[in-house]
Length: 205
Image (tube, rainbow, N blue to C red; front, top):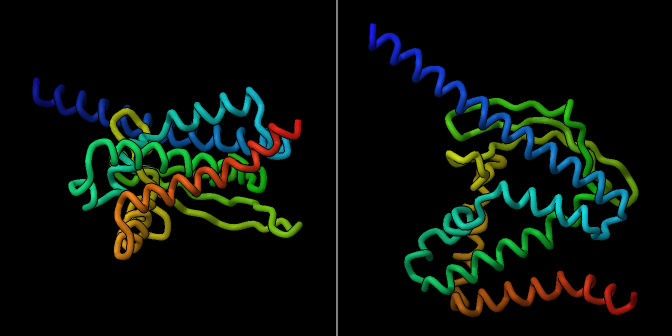
């Protein structure tokens, strides 16, 4: 009797975690869609509300774990300070390069489906509209979100490849001709370049 009760209890607990992961994925995409619509209304400019929404989105991503995965085998070869610097730069690059493009992308939450593949892995399938050269292009997409026990996203699988693995491969290629310090320097220059339009806008206003 005890064993039967224990099995039922564990099943209910697993079901709760499963639904929690799927719900977290739905909430994350709902925030992305909301941010995209706001970005369109603001023509890509920042406001206090958009900054708040962006922070809420970033809070659902486990950047320390993601950056560690992206470093791959290099993680054991660099210092703790270099690892921390890499993480900060990678997070800033993603924020500056990816999120501002949100105004060119739109989707409807009703057209997106969520399926639990395994514990901590949620498949997201749907259609996304993006603006390109004045034309509106509709694309199908299918990704798998990798989530930790707190339901924070630490990696994304697209076309059977993890985003962290893609970045890791690029890092390895760069390190064939550069040192890790030089790679960090390149990342800093990229961050500065992406920040430049905002800085120019502040000066002109």
